[in-house]
Amino acid sequence: MRQALALLIVVSTAAVLAAGAVGPLAEETGALAPVPAQREPLNRGDDCLSPADLREAVAEKRVVPPIAAIRAARQIVPRAEIQRASLCRHEAGLVYLLTALRRDGHFMHVMVDAQSGQVSGQW
Image 1: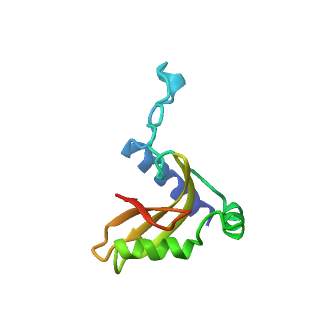
Image 2: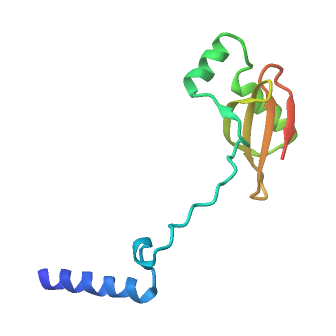
């Protein structure tokens, strides 16, 4: 059993090395390690609130409940399935950022003003 396990490890290591999946380390080449590319945040730089902060804002009646934002988004994107709803700070106020999955398989994003419950943008 030990021999089979050792053989499996040796064969898999050889396969990884042969495929070139492991390259030289930065110390060996003298080059700097590659810097990962900066990606734009999904919410376009907005600062989203935690679920506890969302509940507090709804309880204090500073924002409409998430279901009102979902209903507003469904008027813009009928028959779509809402995948995510986040309450985020945007410019001067709070907005709900909703992600909807359309029937054709494409995602669509809808922004709803959290105070009025009206759709303020989509992309």
